[in-house]
Amino acid sequence: MILVLTYSMYEQCTDPVVDWLLEDDIPFFKLNLEDLVTKKVSYCVDVINNDILIEGKSIKDAIDVIWYRRFYSILDYIRFDPDDTILEQVNEEADSEIKTFLEYLKYFFESKIIMPQMPAYGENKLIFLDYAKKAGLSCPQTIVTNDKEELINFYNKNNGGIISKPLYFSNYYVKGEETYSIYTTTFTEEMIGKAPDKFFPTLFQEKVSSIHEIRIFYLDGKIFSTAAITTSSDKNIDIKLNYYTDHIHWVNYQLPQDIEDKLRVFMKSINLNTGSIDILKTEDGFKFIEVNPVGQFLAPGNYGNYYLEYEIKNWLKHQLEKYGSVKKVIEYIN
Image (cartoon, rainbow, N blue to C red):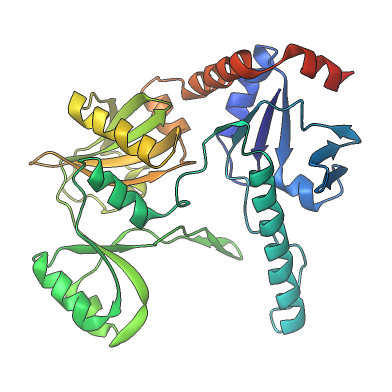
């Protein structure tokens, strides 16, 4: 059986795959993160005897393949007054409790077929860049610094063209009817001038002059590439800000064979069997930017008619047929 681990808020990629699992009568069990912290599902994790029971039934031997989609998210377990420091601390500690529990679940299921596999060294952009470089991919000059003088030196070395972006991930900030988000930002001389001598450690990269950006969905050696062709010279540095404009067009794209081969070497080196990869096409070639193990794939899949939700279903089905046991599923259902 397939175990689908996901969460309900802002996760649009799970259900299209689940629809195909239903269409093909493929046995699966879907578990949302919220189910673990609410009273919707009854479960028991027997740590010493290495077993997990859901609604009184053991699923340890029934599960063969696991697909997870952003299974972890910060939840508000307790609604509290921002001025009440005690309740705020309780909420933070509850979040740590759930994190620890989820880490154990990953450990518990590590012998199963998992997509995505846990990447080597975790989801770390800086380590991924190092492995991409080792695989022969060209990468932008990158630093992390807390020092204004170092930032000025980096700015000058890159002829006044640098950007800043989060080291890991930035979620949406919701305040009333307004929603805010952090995007990749061009860091100007004026911004550097306003920066203090010492600041919070920040990621800076050279600003790559690109012809177009290429979004790649990688699935166990298969590569599906889509290029964003921008017909305006006034394009934003973060392509997400161009999504709903009239001057962006998505087309299928064939990467050179040597770039695809290097991407396969890179993904294997970090132990990832799937992920969404960003690459920039430049005058000189291609620049690797980053990989997101659980990146959004519906939009580029739809633009290129790749039907990626169907490809994922087929991958899960193949793994289940290869490693699963129909007998175990029947025993679980009965």
